[in-house]
Length: 407
Image 1 (tube, rainbow, N blue to C red):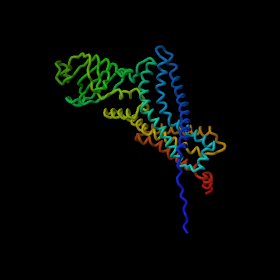
Image 2: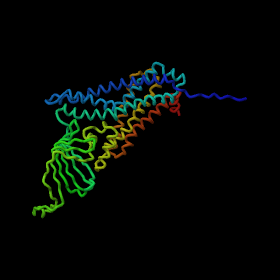
Image 3: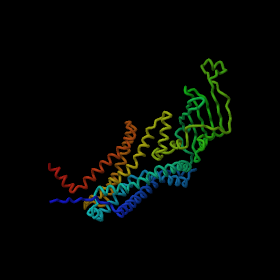
Image 4: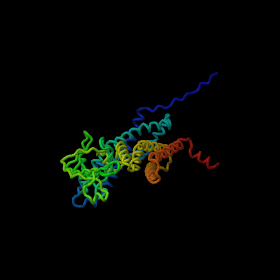
């Protein structure tokens, strides 16, 4: 006599159910996003109230600058908004017994997790578009607006302006090192009062150049200097006997005055943006190019590499935040209201943000590899979330806990 085995087919999520879940989660996440972005925009507006009351300032330009900063805020808030919005939507499903009916119809925990990952992919795509496309462009436009609103051109780090080190290999003279200084960077992307000193491979001065303005020509990749003063230096012995006795053997040419000069340099407006825009508000491609430029000029790249690593791990952080929200759908405590669970989600989001910042500081202080520091918080969140999901999906988790206590 043959005994037939019953084969259980895996539950296939209906398309209508996926659309329903996606619509409810996106509505909740959008609501939380709008609330948080509006709150941070209000904080940004009142941050400079005292300064905007001074003469020469403009509330209009500052309001435009704050509005241009909203895409960056959307990118920053995305993981927490995804977590809180997902918890709210899933808890509503559980409170109305919709989730119970779905599970009774055969919807397993694995199927729910797969469905949540598919829904989270849309949030990740939108967030990446904001972070890599909209936010960097808007932030670059916001820098001169913010400066104009507060009554000055782009602010400086030093009284002498900005200083950068540039390396360039000339086909005829070989490698050259330039120490570039400029006063400001206006909204058209022009440099004002540019000056640089050019040194050879033995660090002997070879040229000094000063220009009133410098504009980048994207067609050829060179800068066009205007109203230029230039002086070159040679190895010929100087005619002054007293200087010769002092060991001075470099001869300076007369100062030349030029209306325009084409200047080839590794500097570009995209790289110079790193001086005025925070690394976390630059795109991954800008961070990569900026890190290569700094490393080629023997400058520290720790904060740029860390920002790049966090950019690459950011989509996974959003995905993990939405996966962490799934265990809340299995909690059916009578004393636990929706507000309590949402508050718990806020605390988890804040905790993740604090742990992320902690590992960022450890990367800078303890010299942790940037990608390890950026990946560990997401990895910890993934392990904790999956452990919590396994625990709440057991038939009687609290009974299992009592058994462990009695041993």
